[in-house]
Picture 1 (cartoon, helix red, strand yellow):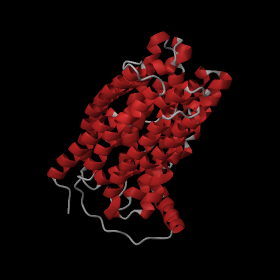
Picture 2: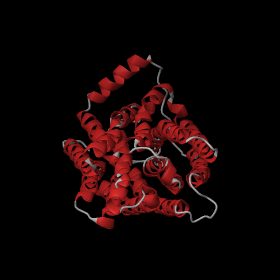
Picture 3: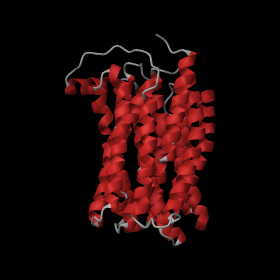
Length: 404
């Protein structure tokens, strides 16, 4: 069985629709800015406020285990169950914020949510990529990514502006922390919709392979992955990309110093800028992938990060907020890196190789806390210099890849 033009179109539309729903709930699904503002409002330091983001990244070791456990025939159902679990986790945080609990318990619930959503979110991502690997052609994938990440972020702008309205007490009778609880509550139906839509992908059959012992599986996966120089360079580049991405939470905390205002007052506006720019970048990165290949789009996201993290060093006052536009555009590397790795792999090897690539996220999970610690000791500007240098290192590594 081969991928047909009808499958290309159907699966591309499903991907776009699922991301419309995901982006509508972006303030709570994308662990980072909102969670940092919430923990900061609960009285934590900059380092603790970065913990939800760090926990989210650390937990993304899940795909490597799941690629070993899950046979090819169950890859699509895992996407469904991962999103159902995510909806349950969001319900737990909502309840924790509504009940009269101590700040330490609420902070713990937000951090744990970041940890477990890192697991479920990465599981959903890895097997969605596999559904696309088994259900689209390379050109069909590039077209689907262009459409998805042009229209999808527009929904995120709407969701972010709605979040800003709620957090600025636009709804009477919803004070802190019930305003944050409401954000989690309204995200639950969207995630349930993602679970249902993910069951509708049409994919080609891939024969199941005999189950190997875990350590043999791990050893063979690392050996086979390492035999492809392009994948090795991509792994280190992705680690640098994840470390650079971690600077987003720290950039949001800088609001108090740059503008003299509570970060909570700008979390919705920040996400609106972030995803509005992502919509524009989604079109151009998709066109770049169609014309120059997926590698070119990967390189572009790293270059954008390098500029975005350094932006507050030269931008005074409210112009500093433009850095979140750069970061939003660069975030699309989270789609282009894994899909590029899948294209460098066979359909049978793609889950193993892409799951190994995702280990770059937990390896880089120290970065948010490091940025927070550097900010506490040396000031925010020092952490921005560090983050920009990390992105440049990733850019150099990926530029050495010659196979496309």
